[in-house]
Amino acid sequence: MTTIAKIALGKNGPMVSKLGLGCMRMSSVWGNPANDETESIATIQMALDNGINFLNTGDFYGSGHNELLVGKAIKNRRNDAFISVKFGGIVYNGQFIGLDLRPIAIKNFINYSLVRLGIDTIDLYQPCRLDNSVPLEDVIGTVADLIKEGKVRYLGVSEITAEQLRKAHSIHPVTALEIGYSLADRQIESNLLPTAEELGIGVVAFANTAEGLLTGEMKAPLPANSYHNHFSRFQGENLVKNLEKVEVLKKMAKEKGYSPTQLAIAWVNAQGEHIMPLVSMSRRSRLPENMSAMEIVFTPEEMNTLNTHFSPGAILGGTYLHR
Ligand SMILES: NC(=O)c1ccc[n+]([C@@H]2O[C@H](COP(=O)([O-])OP(=O)(O)OC[C@H]3O[C@@H](n4cnc5c(N)ncnc54)[C@H](OP(=O)(O)O)[C@@H]3O)[C@@H](O)[C@H]2O)c1
Image (cartoon, rainbow, N blue to C red):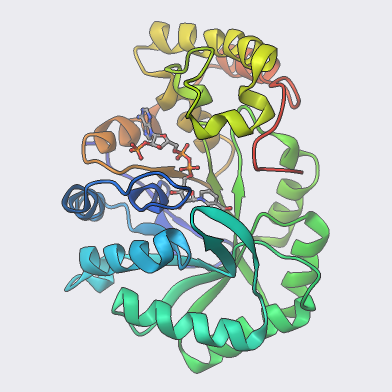
């Protein structure tokens, strides 16, 4: 299988795989059933065997189920894995109902996470979102204290603005920014990405397939029970027009001998040395396909075609990534 390169996460940061494994969809998070646990654990272990050491979870993914799963997968091989955990999200019965970023809450969350994961230190710890309920100094300051205590190695942030990123970094060095980024969601290119680059912060880019839009497998209209129906991107005429755009990706994929998903991952991968595609995979069969996406090289003409057809704003409607 393809060898996955290692990159420094941020300036002088830890060495991690250029491709990350997102574990969220292994658990029941947004009302979906959990994936087969044995297969999920085997997927994590196969990823580790193949040099993918960056594992992404969150304490609210399946109310702790996801961390327990990751904990089982890395038992006896802690050193093979780099564990990234998000905290602060309050999810109840499959609905995101708010944030709790109070220092006492964070101190509570971390100990539960460490027990569930079965480890002494979390490699990258990050608030999943920010709001104005707690001063940023307190949120970041609490993680900085956990770093001093040895419970955390590096600070990360997720889904924040360029201004918040700059401020967080001034309180304590930020190692990585976790952010939704794909051919369909390029708004961060104007401000946030240049800020991360300027500050030497690594970018962990998730939702490369834009909730499946870029897999080329979606057909309009979607089944009535699909969670996608909540998002304007997947409704009525928007979906029809967006799927027309995806035809360009499908055509190029066919010509190059790859799948549209592979091209979607490859495009994110090509955006910079400091940008890591973070891809959900819940079964071992996904790994060879997505790993070989990391080998894809675009000609300047191909890159130009993709960038033109998927210029920022070309995909109509939004998802939960409100910016
Ligand atoms: N910070 C945040 O706010 C935030 C938000 C969302 C997610 N995340 C993290 O980022 C990770 C990735 O995000 P995501 O799940 O939204 O996006 P994604 O990686 O684009 O995954 C979406 C779906 O694509 C499927 N897929 C993977 N490889 C495929 C292939 N080769 N062909 C067809 N379909 C394929 C996966 O299916 P299977 O699961 O069936 O393999 C998954 O259900 C998550 O696991 C999570 O760790 C972070």
